[in-house]
Image (cartoon, rainbow, N blue to C red; front, side):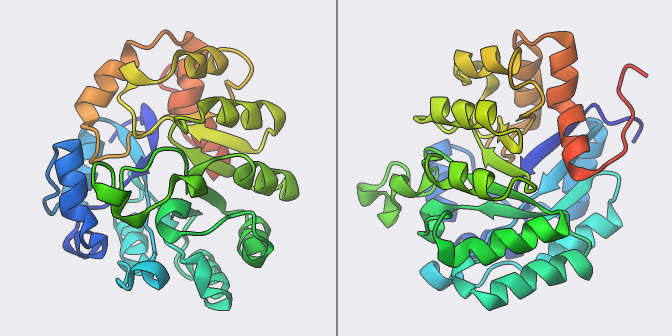
Length: 291
């Protein structure tokens, strides 16, 4: 691959191990998004991104305490990163309810596996309030190690369209107060609120304007549906805090790229959103596509 044109900060591996860890959500989300979940190897995924001159953050999740389903091992993402370093940036899945074991797993993923972040943490599925003091040792360790933390925010695809939403509750995914508290209490921690946070997108924008260590990734929404105030703010006050992301396989890469190209972003802002901001956060040296 030549120069990457973008860093997709949010994609989900689709190997057998990750699909198995979804449990009943695999069929539910396929029905809701009208997009099946078939196995895709890491090699095939890497080629798909490489062919489009993209890098991507591959995320993991661990909700074993709540669901009883064992997660895909973080070692799988770390191995994919080692085998495809030009494409993959690996984030670790952490179950916050596992306490000291979760803290130790964060340390292992950083020190032994070379992973750069934690996430996707999903407070709705994991049924936890990130700003509860019982979870602060997790964010303390992430900040100490210089790891980025990525949280799902806003509407949940998991459980959507089913009676009772499979028991998942949207109250856990509201960015204020939970993520505002974390960004305030850990100013050295890069906190990413995944997706535009609908129906609380204005809360996410307010956090980003108030705290420079809070970032909004645009994943999970077809770009033509991204709320206009998000684009307006990206073009002005928070241009350094908005990140390109797809949520693949929820959204097709080619569709996302085509619709993203049509967004009314200033040229300088587009470069920041697509690659510059993420490269800075993750400590990755990449050349601008214009160089």
